Length: 216
Image (tube, rainbow, N blue to C red; front, top):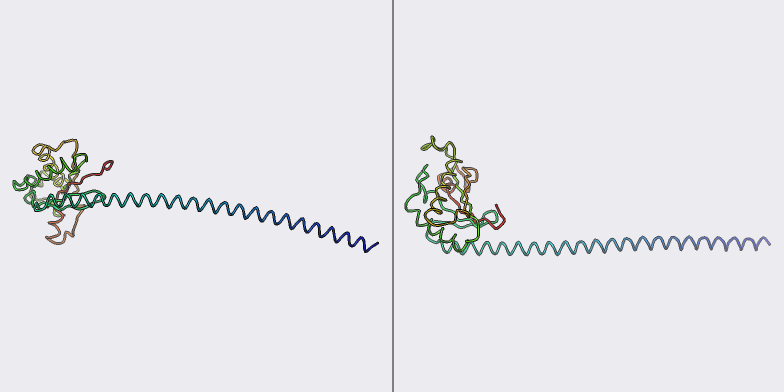
């Protein structure tokens, strides 16, 4: 009789253990399924992010190619004028050395500079007819001496030089006034070290920055 009871107890214990095993197996399976779902969602998110990055990279590369093609085109058209064409902060910029445009410390255009300005104006009215142009004035770090009574600092001098170029482009060359504006940076955006005469000459310049649509 006792043996029978022992057998029954053993069978009950096996049944309980079996139920616990099944329950544990179901919980583990459920956990694994949840982890698998989370991994699939993560993979899907990463694939979408990769596609977006690839699209951005493609657009960026296309914009770089467009800018480089524009730079080469302008460089060819302005060959022999003394102008340099470069890509600056995501825009094409036509750079004219200050020595071509002005006497030292002056803001009146040199007569020989006007042919170059007319050529640039012609390009702005055709190749870049739908874009805004920022005319920037830049100087070296020498303090203003000759016209100190008119221009307190290089900021004022650089802005006045940019304004002189703008007036000529609008009034004499027919560039629409709605398409151009000026900025005077003084000595604060140098291209070269101001410790040498060569560096200072590079820093004295006017730049025509063709602002991308939607830019500022």
